[in-house]
Amino acid sequence: MIPTQLIDILREASHVAVLTGAGVSAESGIPTFRDALTGLWANYRPEELATEAGFRRDPELVWNWYRMRRQAIAATEPNAGHLALARLGGLVTTTLITQNVDGLHARAGSPDPIELHGNITRVKCADCGIPVDPAPDQERVPRCSGCGGLIRPDVVWFGELLPAGALERARAAALDCDLFLSVGTSNLVEPAASLPWMAGRRGTPVIVINTSDEGQRTGPSIRHLIGPSATLLPALIGAAWPAARGGLPG
Ligand code: BV8
Ligand code: ZN
Image 1 (tube, rainbow, N blue to C red):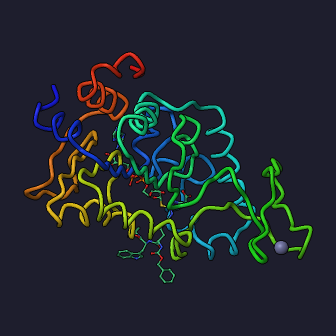
Image 2 (image 1 turned 90 degrees about the vertical axis):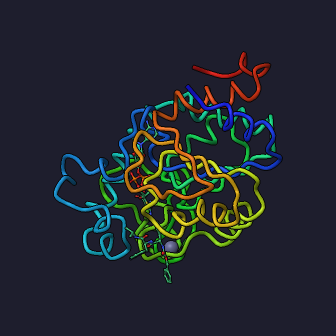
């Protein structure tokens, strides 16, 4: 049951900023980042593999971790949560910011998701940066045809800067929005993790949608909706715009 007050806040908003984390893709069958280390990679911590140093230390291991994840993602579909957020964009000005690298928001129809951590389907030369499209699906780490450098996933690794402009756009939205939805993220990874609280500190209502409130901040403008995003997002958006309910999944 969604509190009427939250439904009213959403309906009356003029600019909604949304930050999503791996929890939004969990119901599409994509393991969250910490769960993504299984099989060959089970003995590693994400912070070891999702780094430039980790890649240079064992390019083949890291290249194939991403290749396995790319294959897994290609076999999935956006879920009702992704589709509801795409529908939201047609009902109110929405800035969709994602930490996810799976590309599911764009596949769900969100026109211009801000991909703070890049996109796993794209690869580029680790030395000269030129993109290679499509990503070669091979075990051996491909080499750049221009400079001979190793090809790597076009994602932001720990210790790397976020794409120029993406973080600025996300921060501007956090400061301009009159409602911030934080969905499916443990808010552990900076600088993305601070975005909801940039809005909350200004007194902007922040609604945290997560299966758990563990580790989530509390505060006067922060409200929690505990449950799966693929259920709660269509329910919240459908309740705010009943006429749109027909177009909402789930
Ligand atoms: C940078 C791409 C600066 C790669 C990713 C010490 C303190 C503070 C910060 C730092 C520090 N030491 C280092 C840092 C900075 C570091 C950082 O934050 N580290 C953390 C670990 C402490 N950050 C960086 O390095 C960033 N860059 O700071 O550069 C700089 C300055 C100068 C010069 C150079 C650099 C770059 C960070 C980007 C890292 N790349 N991804 C890849 O994917 O392989 S981050 C990766 O992990 C994901 O993108 C995601 O953002 C993050 C967390 O993943 P998960 O845990 O899986 O997901 P999430 O956290 O979202 O948790 C899942 C949630 O969903 C849970 O809450 C769960 O309850 C919920 N859930 C589950 N199911 C559902 C659900 N909710 C709803 N419905 C469900 N069904
Ligand atoms: Zn190159």
